[in-house]
Length: 217
Length: 289
Image 1 (tube, chains in turn orange, cyan):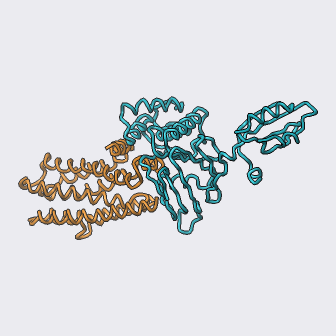
Image 2: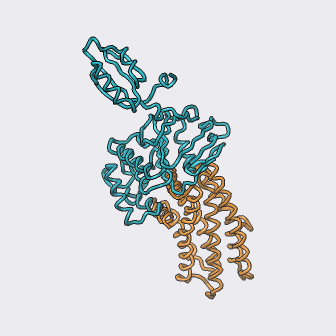
Image 3: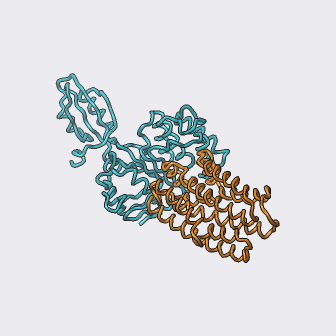
């Protein structure tokens, strides 16, 4: 995919991803000084993955200068195609974070209780679904949907806080609540439910923001 | 309605950027055929860039329709971004890959374009470090990496040195010969190809035929030291569209390009000496006549 290679190359040179990396690394330090079960550890990771994925998607969508983006958009067949390519690039970047978030807890083994394959699978599913939510939030809080960067930053912060703190908010608050319970039960059906819920919500947000962005170009 | 050889058709296209804002374009009708060129001539703020961005589908019309079946489109804006961190070589290699140009063909093409545009200090300099003119050259070079169905250039001649201007003219002409439809904007009429025409964008509308082939003039400046040579005789010559008296007894006449050779022979026969010959366009007064 030539467009993903180009966008990734541009983003890596921008170094704007570094802040997200530092935040994520700080999160890893905090989580691994705690303890708790493997599922609880994955839940804590998902909160930091949410912040990281919002950041990465915002960087992916805004890394190109507007004039540079116009050239790229015409070259790849239009602004909508470019926007979707940028979201796909963000998704690939977030996939690296998911892999790291799945491997680091297992490698450090700073959790109590047994290591069950089911817990690992459910933990990875939770991380993936959090990334989907993060990228969808990022799609909404960037130009040209939100034109002023100050408002965009504020809205992103509110969305992340709401998803992490408001009771029942999908997916992060729900994952934190279920995975961190003393005796989590029916995790499998819950994960399936939250995956479907988040994918549908993300599809609405990405589609809506893409339509608004096209009208505001 | 778009026909077989039409690359782009605009019908009644109107554009304004806010609900209560002024109309930038107030109803543009335009057909661009394959293997032809359109030069959109207009002053600053006349809506040239908006028109090109509409044709490029970068922005949507407020009203009207734009139809195109162009599969490959290249667009060079008036200015390139100032903060591209890649070197010109890396940036152009990526753009070539987006145009499905194989690396084996892309690298020599990038080198060739850098030579033709006289890119300084060179391809390995980060684009953000290039001067304004060289930055603009990179913006134009990416548009000429591979043949395209539709080529859109926003003021490609402004701010460029002579070498680069020559390169743009050659590449645009080659593109039209190869079957591309070309739309470019300019402050003044430009003769890019025999199959090109100039259209003036005034008050949000394109005025057809202004600056077209029919309006082209060869302007000949003449002087004489022979008492028998009279300006009145020049007006009677076939092919002479206008005669204007200048200071110091010199005169300037406008002739259609097709008859300019005959006019030159005739004025020499009448005892006039040629001081200069240049290409221009009919004035509004001549056009009314």
